[in-house]
Structures are given as structure tokens and as C-alpha cells.
Length: 180
Image 1 (spheres, one colour):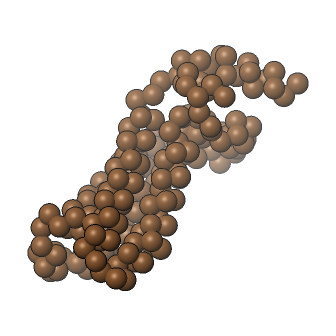
Image 2 (image 1 turned 90 degrees about the horizontal axis):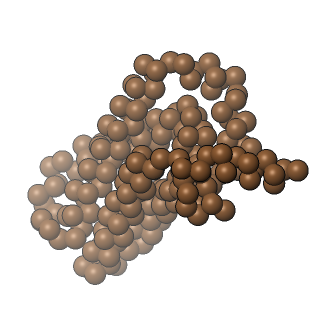
Image 3 (image 1 turned 45 degrees about the vertical axis):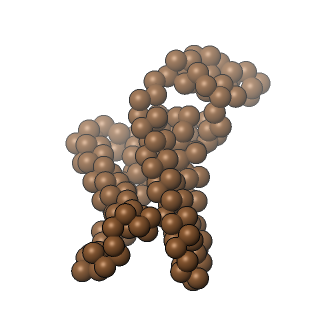
């Protein structure tokens, strides 16, 4: 289906997004621009902390600097990684609920969510398996996959941020015709 952004995309159901957009809580919070600004700031800080830490860990995994060089900061990096991820996800959810239609209809919103899910599966399930045998090739492959996934998430976010609606009326009309 061609979306409001003029490209083929699979999105969350418009009826579900509209129900979220017209919920009492969302309508009560929508007018608070200061809250939006703080949430956006927290999201950017969380993403920066998380992706920056992932890059450090993955660049080390690729062999670009010795593993021993990160040993003194291993615990703080783990805390930063986890805290950044939690802040990014919670604030991202809040930003989505602030404007479900504006966020949920973007071309790369669902691919971004799929990549985040894959990144989690890789980090919690596949990556530890790669580390069991501790071969250099497996460590580097796992680090390369992780780096690719999280940089792709950033790419999807950038795409969504710069994307502007071009076919709003056509998409809404098609949605209404489809309901009849």
C-alpha cells in the first residue's frame, strides 16, 4: 500500500493508531510542549549513550584496539549500555504515544522496530553463542552484525525524521473507501 509519504510501506493499522491518538491520556498530554522537549532530549541522550557504547564494544570486537584497553571501564560501560537502552526505549515509547499517527505511519518505523528486536535477540541470544567457542572469526562476525544492526536503526530513525508527508489526502481517502 502506498502510504502518506508516497512510498510503499507496511505500517501499523491506521485505526489502532487513530484510537491511540484520540485517547484521553494522549489528548491530555499533547498540549504540554515542554514535556515533549524533555522527552525528546532524554531520547537523544539515551540513544547516544547506548549506540556510543555499542560502537566501542563492537570496534573492540572487530580487533581495532586491544581488549585489555577497555578492562578498567568494563563495568561502567555495561551500566551505560543498559541505562542508555532503557532510557531510549522508555522515552521512545513516550514519543510514540505523544503522536502515534505522526510516528507510526513513517516508512521506516516498523523496519526500525524489527531491527531493534533483532538487535536484542542477537545481543542476548546469538552473540553469547558466538562467544562460546571464542574464535576470532565468530567474535568479529558477531561484532560486525551488531554494528550493522544498530547503525541501521539509526539510519531508519534519520529517514523517518526527514520524511515529509506528500499524499495525506489520498491515503486517508483510500482508508475510508476501504472501510465501506
